[in-house]
Length: 465
Image (cartoon, rainbow, N blue to C red; front, top):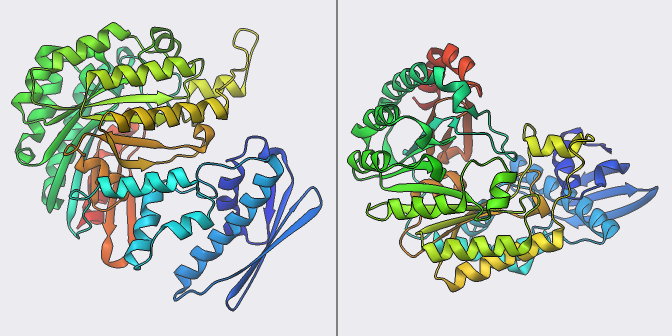
């Protein structure tokens, strides 16, 4: 447990504690004294106090609080790093978007590297951030009124063991599809007047291709008036629901990008995580998509329980051989609601405690993917992190030159409004002139969403108008 004299800091400090497995069992005390130009952080562990004094200057109360938070987290990180004899790849950084911090430094006319070194970020990851910023050139834009539209289709063939989204197998949710699509039409019609400069459309899931062709066409038809010159992605999903008919519909209605969510090319791993497709079907999906003019993204996950380093290496090599324009390498992240996390927390005789990959092997996977993708001509163009991410690593989107996704850059950098419709969708209004973001989340489960769609429309109108 952790106690701090500054209660407002405790959630932030707990994010640092969670970076170190076993640290939540320790008794930690934190005390801060901030005087003009100096902050003193004392972290007590096992009765021993560790004191850190840092000079700082701030031009506003907002900046002052940000710096106090930064130095408190760094002090706690230093103590835990020494206690566990372990350096983490992102140091004391717990934020989802390391690149946003880099951009903030650049906007102040400063190189971001000294700050990242202060925060104990590894040199390799500092280099990765620099490469991501380079990869975003020509796509990254901060301009009032820019917007992206997200459409949520929370339907899947089955639920993966690592998934924490509120989704259920289509057999259990199919009865909601007609009413859900009607609600989307309501939301979309109300949202159209709120959109100023549309940069991209993104239909995500779930697994959009799990819908029957007539239902998928209904979604694509309602979005058709907004398609045209903007980037338009359908996160098609798993290969076992791919058909030429669905790909024909995407081409007909102006879709420019699709995602083939492989996660792994190992049949053993795919079965273990609850996927209903095989490696052979992945190859069939890629072959099926070849005649179409789509930019294709392939997703992989490093650290899936039970998968060896060799199996992951093979997955990366097979993905590269298929040569999609984009490859995203995720790190396993187990949030509340994921079956895999529940099995780890509450082992039984039939389902004993699961052992995740060691940090050393996970780091080997990440390093291998970066090396192979770089050699194959891919460059990183977005990255983000999540709480409870294995090994405190990250997710990275890689692209061949000229194929970076506008939507992914806008969302990850929070540089444009995100108008999101559907259940479990979070809309964001980015107010650049004031340096703040306002959010509005939709209900996660489908029945509640259907009951509240009219109220959501009112709240969205208020947020974006």
